[in-house]
Length: 540
Image (cartoon, rainbow, N blue to C red; front, top):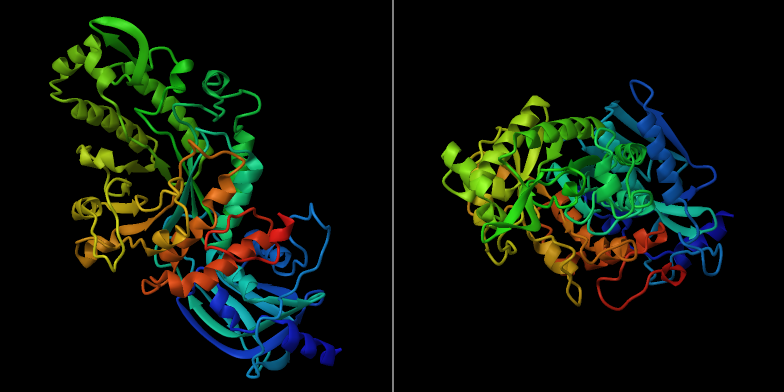
C-alpha cells in the first residue's frame, strides 16, 4: 500500500512547492520538499479553545468539504469523475516522510461578530520530521484564514489520498478592510449567487461584503416599517426582493466565514425607486416655472423627509448589525433642485448659497441621524469634498480620479486630500470590475497600489484598505460570478499580501491555480489569463 502511494506521489503529483500556490500569498513562508501522506478518511481536526466555538467547528467542516473533494464541483456532464494532479514534471528532490494523521486548530478567543480591525493573524506549521501539524490564532478569524490556507496546501494524488509538504507560515493581512461591493439594484441577484460570492470571498480572504442593495432602478429591500417601498419599488415585489429572513441568512453565512456585511442606502441621489411609494420624498422638477412630471433627488427642504429617513435607517441599522453603515452621497444631479421654486425659497431662508452646500445641508442632517442611532458610517468622497462635518471615525470611500502602479509613480490627490484631514479611507477607483477589457485585465488590478500617493507615513496608515466594485448595469445572474472572479482575486492579494508582490508575471501561475481551485469548488469563474486549462473546466 505504501509502495503504491509512493509510486502515485512520484508519478502523478504536480511536483512543486505547495505553498507557491497559496492565494493570497502569505506574509512569511518557509517550505521544503518533504511531503506527508494524508488519508482523507482517517484525517482528524482537533479543536482547542477556551470555550466551545461554533464558528470554529463550522470552519473545520467547510475545510473538510473543500479540501478532500474528489470530483469537480459541477457534475452536470460526466457525473462523479475523479480528478488528480496530472504529470507535469518529476523532481528527484521530493522526499516522502510518512503520514499526517491530523491537525490541531487552537484559538485564544471566539469572538461572535467580525468587525473593523478584527485580528486575522495565524501561524500554520506542518513538520515532516515530527509529524506535528497545527494552526494557532489569537482570535477565531485568524483560524478561519489559516484553515483556508491549509486547504490550499494540499494536493490530491489518488482516491482518498492527498499530500502536503513541510511548511511554516506566519501570516496576517496588510490591510484591515478588504471588501467587495455588489450592486443588487440594477439587476437582481438571487440568493444562491450571493452565497457563492461569499464563498469566493472566503477563498480569497476578503472580509467585507459591501451590499449596494437599492438604487434608482429598484428597491428589493423588504422593510417592515415601510412595506410599500418594495411593493412599489422592486422589479417584482414577490420574486425580486430580499426579505428580513433572507438578509439574516446572508449575514449569518458571511459571519461564519469572517466576513462583515456593510449595507449601503445611497441618498439623496439614486433614489427614484424610493419615490414610487413615498409621497413628497423626491424633488419635483420644473420647466419654465411649471411642473414637468419628473422627479430629482430627495427634497432636502421637506422636514418630513428626515422623519422618514430616521425611521427607515433605525430599522436598517437594526437589521444589519455591523458598526458601519454606508451612507452613499455620490453623483447628485442638481438640475431638478435648480428648477424648483420651493427649493430656491428654502435656500434663501437658510442662507444656503450653492447647490453643493444644499447637498451638504442634507448630508449633515443624515449624519446627525446616524449619530443619534449610534452608528459609524462610510461616505462616498463627494461628501468629504463638499465639506460636510464628519465624525472622526468616518471612512471616506474614494472612487474618483486616476490611478496607477507604484512603478509608474502615479499619485492620487483624492487619497492625499482625505488623509491630510485625518480621515480614514478605502480605495475603489482602480478596481471597477464592471469596466472590463479584452485580455488579461487582472494584471492591471493586481498592480493597483493603495499607498501610491504623495503623503506621509501617517497619512498612508489611514488608508485602511479597499474594495473592487461590481456595478450591475450590465451584470445579472448570468454573468455575475464570471465577471467578478477571478478579477477580484487580484485585488485580494494586493490587500492581503506584502507590498513587494507587485509583478503579475511572478503571480501568474498562482493566479491560474487559484482560478482552477475556485472552479474545482463549483464556481463558474472566467479564464482571465489567456489560453490554458483546468482539471474541472470540462464540467462547467
